[in-house]
Amino acid sequence: MSNGSPVPSADSRFGRRRAAIIKSAAHVFGRKGFHGTTLEEIAAELQVTKASLYYYFSTKEELLYEVHLLSMQDVLGRVEAIKAASDSPVEQLEAATTEHLRVLAGDYEGAFLLQQEYDVPEEYRQEIIRLRDRY
Image (cartoon, rainbow, N blue to C red; front, side):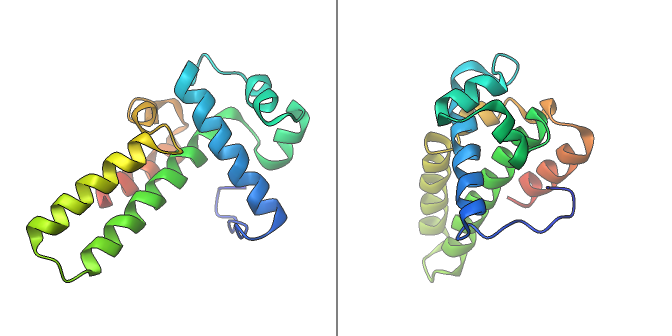
């Protein structure tokens, strides 16, 4: 679904379910690492079947990519909001640092993500790197 397909609205039932899967995957990946996590474990955390995950995501690598993507979009949105504020550069830097730490400690198991970008296929990795560089 990621490659050029429009991302479903988070307000749709499909979009909400997809977001819940991404967040659960982030937690499991954070605890066990990408290679140590199976789709069965992610499905068990959500109390769904592994087959139902395939309705939303083709591969575990695609799911990892979506975790990265959601995290990067979140942190970039936070930074853009901080930049739009009329605070001084020092206040903006302090606020950006605070938001960075919130994302690292939040829903996406951010510290784990810092070590996992090379576990996604090249096509996904380039997008993650582009977003990281923008950040």
